[in-house]
Image (cartoon, rainbow, N blue to C red):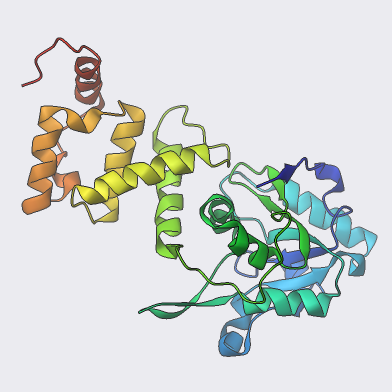
Amino acid sequence: MPEMQVIEHRLLDEHTFLLLDQAHARSSFWRGMPGISIAPTVLEKEAAALPRLVAVDQLDQAQRVQALDDLLSAPVETPRPVAALMVSDGGIDRLAKHLSARLVVSIPLQGKHLFRYYDPRVFRHLLWMAAPAQLAALFGPVSAWTWCDHQGHWHRSLPPQGIEPALSFHPTGLDLARIGLLERCLKVLRNTVPDYTDDAGDVQPRHVNALLDVALAHGLIDEADLHLYVVQAVRFHPRIHSHPDLVRRLQAASTDDSYVGACSDLDADTLTRYARELSSPCKDHA
């Protein structure tokens, strides 16, 4: 997915619309901004918690200055009041209609679900998980979509080229629940693994996603167990779970215990020793 450099002090000037996430826009300043709701009819009762679309050219200079200051000064790991800034040559009504139509998706055997594509914590994963045709349908009339990562850095993503956007978005092949699990797992890694770097690209999410696949194949289901499995592999050794002691603990967890419980007596020194043993091919680990 192509990405362009973002000049932060020109963040508002380079976009035509901002998508206000009302779940995180709690101040009277943001709540008082002019704009229109993108909540579809089926979600009109929840409209106060769903995004509103604001035309940047409707903001006066004082509003622009305060908005830019708020967007650039929020602490890390803090969701911004603006979920996205967009460039679109259509009017606000056209774009609002497009975004509204994608808020609810139908999933086979599960019914209709709210699709929080606008949340940067979801959008970043759609950029590598979704097929090009799906991304084209999501972008629609948007020619540039700028979003903020957990570190407060802004990224501008462009739609796939040469693909005519479909009129509707279909989540075929996308596990939307998995996106939430993956993002929560990445946050645990950032908070617990020393010097762990998550640069908002797709390398770390792909790696963690693969580890989650292996953890699930071991029979782990509880989210705390999945988090622990991933942290162990990332922090100590990519093959840490091939160590005989952890093999036994995984087997115990799959029968009558949680993996967190099965590992309750393990400390970092022990796992570091296991990692050294795995790096010494001639050593007997039994």
